[in-house]
Image 1 (spheres, rainbow, N blue to C red):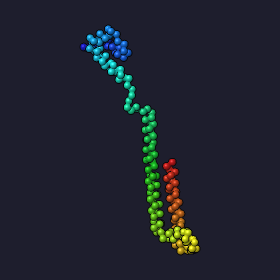
Image 2: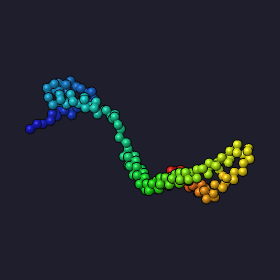
Image 3: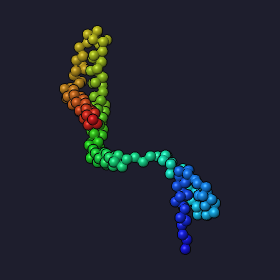
Image 4: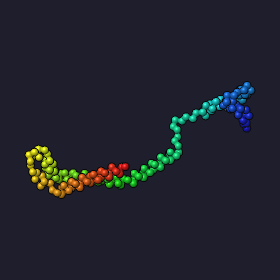
Length: 161
């Protein structure tokens, strides 16, 4: 059966406050438990004074708030995924329509654009061949495709805000 030395609290107090008496020093020299307490006590006092950590832990309320924000962001991204896919499909369809129209009527569009050149205007050409080859349906298709392009682009820009 081991018993604690009754002077051990006095030794620890003396180590903490640096208040050694001659009788306490003599006791530490004769008592192994008190000698161990005096040796470890000074180290424990220095260790308890260290409060610096490498990484200070954040406030739990801040962590909770960040988790809620990330959760709501994930819900918004999941909800907007079908709309994003629809926008991509709309861009692809509009690009395909532009490519088809420009390929189909490239010669007529080229004649019509050349009609507005300064050289053509100076020579006073009538441009009847350009207007004959560029029908009202093609102009209507150009207007519709341009409107669809602007509409999808505006929707994308405004949806991000």
